[in-house]
Image (cartoon, rainbow, N blue to C red):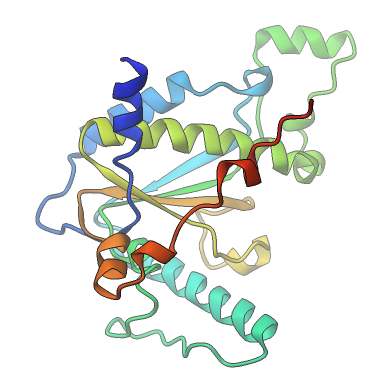
Length: 233
């Protein structure tokens, strides 16, 4: 794949507000894309100290519970920091919160990235004997490597997104969620700190479309590159 082909592929990504419900990607395709991401994502010491929990089309109740937690988190953050009540978070299915969160509730596939207690491969088992400290394998040190796990999750998610777009699948991300594990006690498949929520499927309505209707698309732009990339001469 040439640089221009890669650029054109990555330029296809758009934030999804609603996925198609009549056209769901087959599970074997999603499994293949996940395998590609697993195979091509690098990891320090080959540990991959994160887990990817996949909720398929049938996990409606679980997705609704996660969406509820995320909207409540948004309400808490905005109310406490902006000093005014922003939303009313309700738990009935007819309630429509901010459209930027709906993709977490209504999607074919929801991926939950969390920390994971890793294991040494045979090479690093030998390295440990000679003094290598494998902090990824120690529950008491997982908090110290949250940054490492988060960066690696970003690699995995970016690779997966690229493979998805190659098959005309869309992806979106969610970061507004409770950080403390005690807040997930009623969600038994989340046993370690969440890092990222990602959805995938065939998009039907995109964020840019709504913003264009509102006449605000031209306002939603990235900072210029010189604000982000700084050469130290």
